[in-house]
Amino acid sequence: MRYLLEPFGSPFMQRALAEALLLGAVAAVVSVFVVLRRLSFVADVLTHTVFPGVVIGFVVAGTSGIVWGASVFAVLSTVLITVLAGRSRVTEDASMAIVLTGFFAVGVVLVSRQTSFTSDLTAFLFGRILTVDRQQLVVTAVIGAAVLLLLGLLGKELLFRAFDPAGAEARGYRVLALDLVLNLVVALVVVAAVRAVGTVLVIALLVVPGAAGRLLSDRLAGITLIAVGTALLAGWLGLVASWQASVNHGLRLASGATVVLVLVLLYGVAAAIATARKVRA
Amino acid sequence: MSLLQDGYARRALIEALLVGALCGLVGVHVVLRRLSFFTMAMTHATFPGVVLAALVGVDLLLGSGLFGVLVVLGVSWLTTRPRSDSAAAVGVVLSAGFALGVALLSAQAGFTRDLSAYLVGSIVTVQAGDLVKTALVLAAVALTLALVGKELVFGAFDRGGMVAAGYPAGRLDLLLLLVVELTVVTSVPAVGTIQAVALMSPPATRPAGSTCSCCSWSS
Image (cartoon, rainbow over all chains, first blue to last red; front, side, top):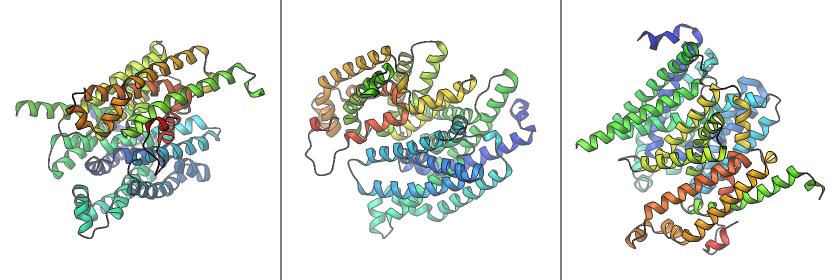
């Protein structure tokens, strides 16, 4: 037990833990919807389209500008993606790929013009959870609150649309508007996660918890509980793993990566339990 | 053209042509079967293969190719689990692969340098040996698609009918995933992850209102 609590003596580790837990919980709730609505690809596209915003924000206003730049691009790309997904039929999948690669390439080009190219790129893509400061925690908390508020207000409608879009449309709900809201919620989580785990690893937080929950439960409440629990556990254990590896074994393992690896391991456990249940039943 | 005076420029051009042809051929099926997400995920998930191969000292293409096969099998297996849909399975594998790659890479010194080359490729440092490998892969893939292309299209449009007609649809699906994986690991060192996905999608996208002819879609 001491092994699991030991890393969190210093303030920076405590902040990292707070960020991981906060972000994990919020992302986990959103991931339930991502898995339900099969939005994994949309979420992945959003993580890549927010990237140029991150770079532009950084170039214009330094590290504090990252969230603003990311937010602008989050809104822009959400609208673009929602419209594209709503319109085209056969080429929806491919048009997403075009948007993804186009935006991300712009981001890479912009980053490459900076002299600090390689370290900036790494920070944006994988985050630096260990350098999270109090201001960032506040930003994460605010975005988290906004996300949970939106989901709380529109949860029932979003669920209705998820299971019966035609019915929802017939009942008078604007399906396109609901889709826009959910995509925006996903994009906001990406923005919140950028500094901590980076744009690439946030996709893990947005898919794996919900997927693990779905494996073990049929009921929305169950799925959500398992998803949040998994994300919290992964955040904590992931940071422990990274710290212990670094301090006791001299092995530098990026913290964002260890959190994701633990998360996937927990998914594996869930898959094993699900298979065992099926075999027994 | 003075541009082609230098050996590296000539090799880069040939590599670009080869990779373009390869991605174009495979891209048709990627678009048909809506495998863009899978392709994207492959670029992320085969990343640890590259890192491992570099660590162990094995040929990068071989290492990442073999690792990629594991990934494809993993995705296929996960998709057959009860209550899991393929998009979530792909998402899980993508996350796992990339996190593993990042962890491995951060454990050694050259973290950031290797990453940029991986993201945007390094076509100007292509060697003659790489050209041969790419050409071989292109030949193998072209041959495979020539042999089972019709069946793959059949499966893309009417999987139920295909199964009913007695074709091994599952194995053909797996074969295509492996072809995509091979294309990804061959293209990424040259053009990077972004370009690889880009090359496999837009050129194959059917313009609205055109006739449905697979031959006319290949780049």
